[in-house]
Image 1: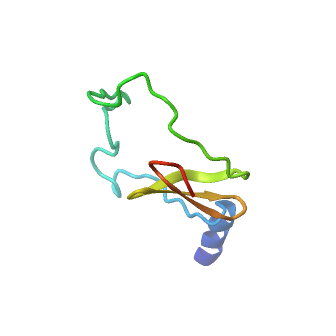
Image 2 (image 1 turned 90 degrees about the vertical axis):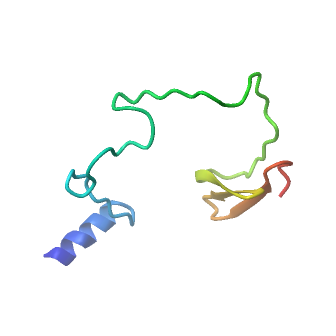
Image 3 (image 1 turned 135 degrees about the vertical axis):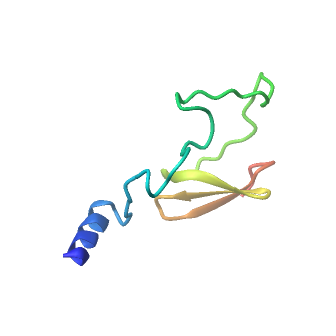
Length: 92
């Protein structure tokens, strides 16, 4: 029965198995930043006005958020293709 339950959970979750949150498994404060009401104060950040530095059209829907790795920005697409860009210039 346990194997069937795991198989059903995996199939329903598109290959992801989600464990429910529980105070016994994750005690204490579980929010990464801010307070219990969801508020957070940002003291420092980029100075406005902000401008778009570069953009790229990959021609396919992206999957997830981009990943920064040193001077590179990596983005998966539904193709499935991995696109790698220079963070400073936007070149491939």
